[in-house]
Image (cartoon, rainbow, N blue to C red; front, side, top):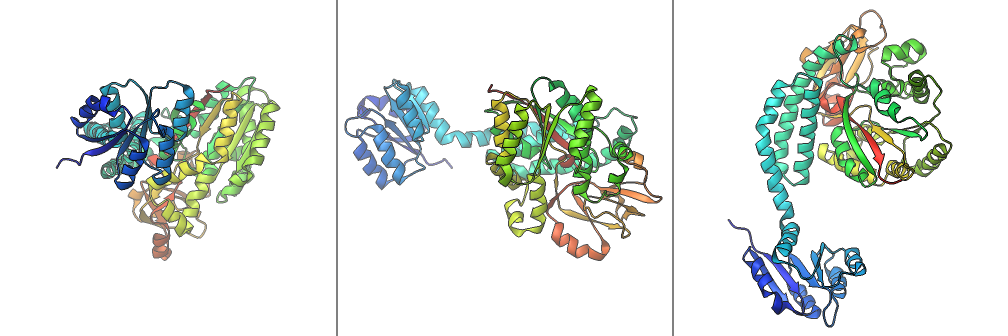
Length: 522
């Protein structure tokens, strides 16, 4: 079935001279009505809708901009292309300021006109068709890449591409293909868990070459930029790769963005992964230097109370000198202006590294589990991305990053771990001393009813952990499983199913971005 013709109203006092252009558009399936003055055009628009208005600026009677102003009062979303003989910047600026969709200078060729009309009226449909066609062509290769994946780069590049397809298909309105991408992602998770169980203990023991881990970020990404100017290290807590990808367009006006991927250490939780970033050390190395911290291992807030000290100590080890550090942990945008003022003061005092942690994303997913309102606002990966972008656009983070760009300062932006939408419960048996987390647990004689749902070990060296008590087990959830107790099975299932959680083994939690932002503005 052919689509209905798109209707175009062309308003120009020389409309009779433009008949060849109108015929050219009509031959390509558009219905074009021509009219010679603004008053008649407004009367016609009040009677019937048009998909696009081509509007001459310089006409007897009402000028095009006056017609546009009147049209906007009655139809704020009308699509308008301004066409004028004037090449003055002022006319163009005024037209753009009044939200025209495009601007053409006479004389226009039929092909130039067709290009603009097609982009405005058919652009979204063409993009939708093209991305669907591109994905269909790529789909077989994605399956082969998954089957062959056996190295960190294999898993990281495939996961990265699946994230891009999910974002692109959603942006193009091709929601019908999102289920196919999600199916591929589910298969990737299924392969990723056993692979991590096999290779992660070898990475921790130095038996295999690991990828870039949380412990490497300061040395590899911050250290090369230390010099006369301060360097920013910004950690957006609990940021998935797809959340990051929708933020990048908001940064590119101010920065050249160089993205890489790294693997979060296990468990993918703040006390371990974020401490690893700031310290450059694994949990057993931190515990040897600070044994009193490890006793509070189930208290996430207290375990991350020393990040400024850990960062200063790591910089001293790496450089052999004291590097001045300014550190802020930001929980609310209510404090954004004070934070911004303190950061600018630190920059002007020639501090070496500005370390900033923003907790919004982590707070969002934890609040979501307890709030029906947040659950509805971030009900799936797509809505979580949209909510993240809406927050970031108006956040104190973006204000501070733009200040850094204006000062000509380099920013290293990363996260400690991501999160995963958990849909399946797995039953665990534990004593009362077991930790309370839903994606990972430590405890005496801890075991899962189905061993295929967890990464389980009793050897702390497999996780680079300090020696534990006799009989201590470490259990970390795979894929999208969350842990429930047999005594609270129904309660936990009802409360936490379809929740975003972290701490476990999945590409969403472990494969996360680290980006170097170089300012465009100096």
